Image (cartoon, rainbow, N blue to C red; front, side, top):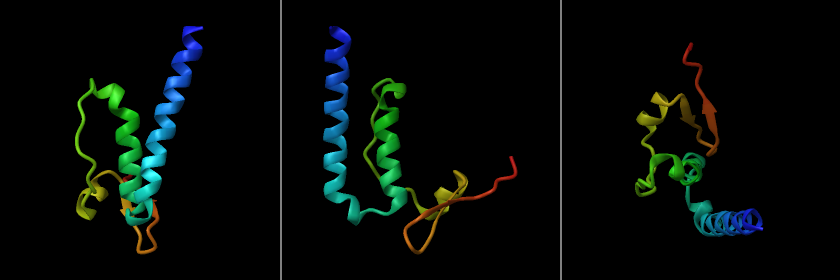
Amino acid sequence: MESITGARQALTRIAGFFSELRKTAEQLTALERWYRILSQALKRFSAGETRPARPIPARGAASYGLRSCSNGSIQTVNLGI
């Protein structure tokens, strides 16, 4: 029964996060939206350490193998790895 309660709490927390993200999603670039989603998803693995959601500068995105396009989409860059 505990696992059902835990799963229900997790789904409620996730739904709340996406509900909040939906309110500002149109104002964010695709890269900023993914940054927020991944930051939220990885909180548990960063020992609770949180950082404010912030956009990744275009020059910094390239170092992660990402490139923002003028239409708001994100392309991966072949890093030859």
